[in-house]
Length: 113
Image (cartoon, rainbow, N blue to C red):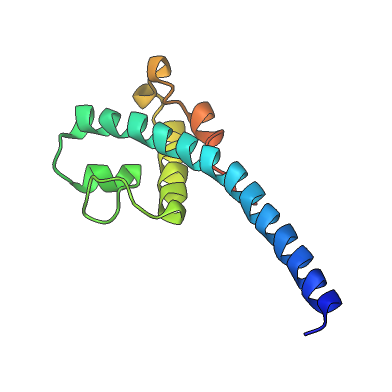
């Protein structure tokens, strides 16, 4: 491999490594914010419906026969979206003191057009 080809490949690799780092720098705080909000929102359902999963939990967005928070980011985003809808329809479940409101929920996940 000629030196110029290797040099160009090395520069391309460095640019892509920087792009990956930049993506992680953006993703990590957003994922943390989402998880923090879900961790604050889940106890509200516990206080209303108890620890055991039921159809009431499903109405909030916990649809997998579990009250646990999902591990996958896509599933967390879906749950947050469902909780926001639930809070919109049931504003008495909002707890402003803990930041669990429809408005704060909208700010912690990317709405889809």
